Length: 409
Image 1 (cartoon, one colour):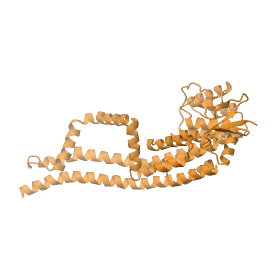
Image 2 (image 1 turned 135 degrees about the vertical axis):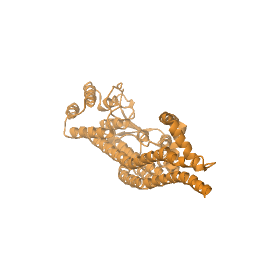
Image 3 (image 1 turned 45 degrees about the vertical axis):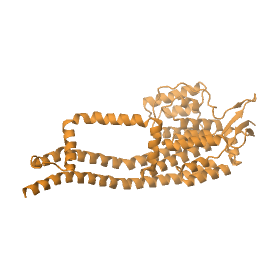
Image 4 (image 1 turned 180 degrees about the vertical axis):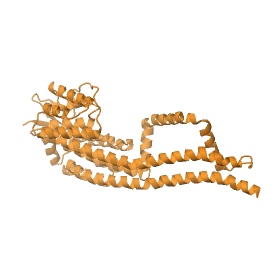
């Protein structure tokens, strides 16, 4: 029986375990309450091959077709179904390629088939198509190949992608109406300020020595749009470009992301979405046989927030030095206590993957609740903002008319 060498927090070195394959070895260790940070097989010559770098060399990336998450989920689910039905890998890919794919996607599948026929694994072939397969998907495929349960892991990957698509669509649906409403508000204010206000104020020109402050503000905005309308688009593009360039700076990105997490309603939505993705992804990776540290590093990219990603970097350092995953997460305050307790219990019981997958559904339900609350609360906030702007404009019109009436009366 093959022998696998592994390291774990607090072990102070390496240890070995015998198992039929790497996935079985990992599950047995977790059953014993051990969460390995790395695991690899010992070949016949006695050298240990790393479980984290067992993928071998990566082929240079080709100009492949990009796939949306929904398309990638469908492709992986079809492949899992074909493999479960007993089809060989190449035949399964050829069958999928015939099912109405566009030319670029078909070319990508042909590239996968060619690489596999040349002796490469599916994981290495997918890594050569970075526009189609994310790092997360590639690592899941490699974990499935290493454990000998590729079709099971592919089904888990498809389920993970489907749930991620569902969350993204919920967030998009929640923000679509407020975005449309904000656009209409902007158009309405521009029309009022540039068209209606100047015509109304013509009646008081020359009859009042000094216009009220609100009237001066509105008149100045109307004058700018009337004389420099051609500069509005370039200035807006310049502002967007500058903001994007600043946001790409690590220090500014970190400060902005920290601030977003503190915004009422919006911060809760961002945090719940990130936690739901993190829990589902980490549970899927660990259950697929990927060591804890590598799984955490892959999962970090799904958070979408630099402040929370920094916590995961700290977690990886702590686990490598022999500490638990839960401690840094609890100190940060960004992750809910329920998740921290689940991870802590999972590490102690060796059932981290099971508990994470069970908890993922609860966090996804919580995300839907947060999104619905955000969608309910944001439109009234925008309407109140519009009312304040319109009220300021009306005040700018009424004040000079009242002054003129007083001077005439």
